Image 1 (tube, rainbow, N blue to C red):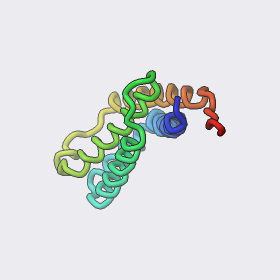
Image 2 (image 1 turned 180 degrees about the vertical axis):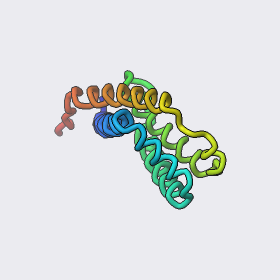
Image 3 (image 1 turned 90 degrees about the horizontal axis):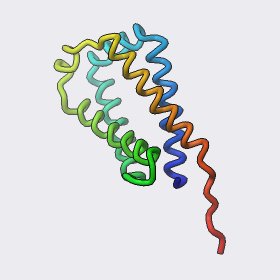
Length: 135
């Protein structure tokens, strides 16, 4: 596993674990937060731009589709961020706010995110550090 893959697996893994735990522990609060954000266009624009830039940075640095599950999952995280950011930029907020988030969706996304994050963190922290060759 390359150093970039190891770093991004750790970063995304720990981030997904924290976000997923928040979703699972405080579903009403998370639902209220999402509802409030979908009514605030400047906040959504900021989130969309940051998400697209982070996703593009990930994809440009790490567009790896082979080498095991961890590198592919890291690449999928990058492409998911690009897609989510693009959707937030171009889908009208009036359309987004018509679909309230059901508790079952929050539970499912929190559980999936927790599993994905746990795997990435495990893969990133168990991978041996690579040593640069000396001349």
